Image 1 (tube, helix red, strand yellow):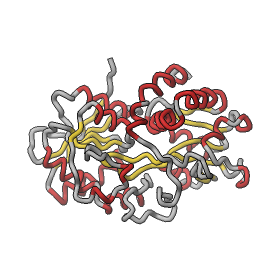
Image 2: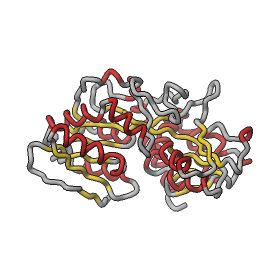
Image 3: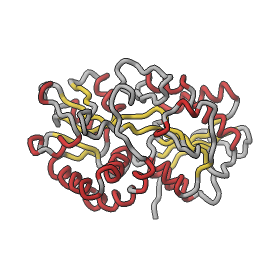
Image 4: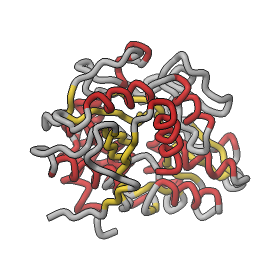
Length: 330
């Protein structure tokens, strides 16, 4: 049986003027928007943050366990595939916010069961003291190039955005190529517990480059580490860079549907995406009406990987079944 440690912050069940939100985005980034929403609307937010490192998986497991008696109104996930797993299980309600058409079709459900916003990109972070500009890696395939053996890194691909990335590759490449890639990756690159640890290892010179998320890469840039961000696979015929959105979804038969809809409307405002982009997490706007800060590359400025996220969600179990024995004990 799967046990997770979950924390409710300031929760007061029983009020009709509240919304219970399960939140995978870090509290320091999400809480200011809850407080602003409360001040503007008078609706109280009862957030539930998972205290474990594999928070997206933990919150998804909690929602599945509660499916017959939902306690959650809105799920703010920091990726998309576990949201789609909940959709496939029939747990999500349809809702169309006033500005839903502002978001690209590939980052929202055609049925209105989830909306993607404030994304992160999967990038290569390079130590500029160790790698000359002309020698910088340009593709995720450089992670399995023998010339970089032991000098590059990745996060354990069993949870978080790395697990999402893996399922996407199983979908886009097919199982044979994906299995070959991850088998070679294990032999060629160093594995770290998470994306932040990958970024720190690059910044400190433990490795020459690594695959990580833009928020962790930006953190190393802000700290003054000698690093540069490479958006991978931009060449002709290459995959493009994977953008992984935060997602918002309302639970079917949730306790406070009216408050849930108000919160989704609020969080999908351009001002919220702009604030998340300008903040320390450097979330990437998906609404083309939002102007990104100069240091942030969006799907309009870098070629994005073309992904059928539903097809990738269908590959989640296949990817996990292959990757778990390969990487669990490493």
